[in-house]
Image (cartoon, rainbow, N blue to C red; front, side, top):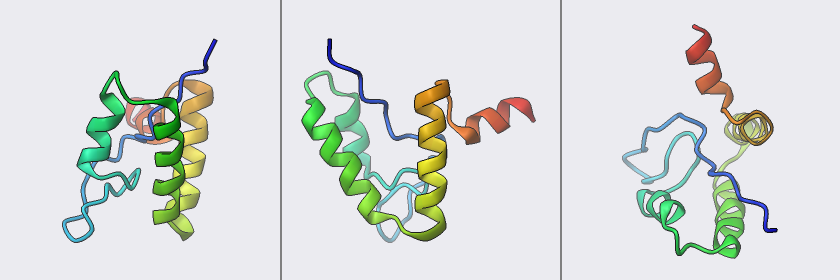
Length: 86
């Protein structure tokens, strides 16, 4: 059985007008659409995860890594968890 690759969305969905990258996950709108497509391969998703992480640095990368790990383990991003608790 192939393990599903969890979407990198961490519920901070706002696109930077200069770069075109999401502030939360560093994906473009086209990449977000590609993730939702049933025809998208596991290999493409793994490569895209590598690519989006290479776009981040410092606190953004640290925040993404922490929230994405939480989402994989708990099924919800840290940002969304805090919104629901608030």
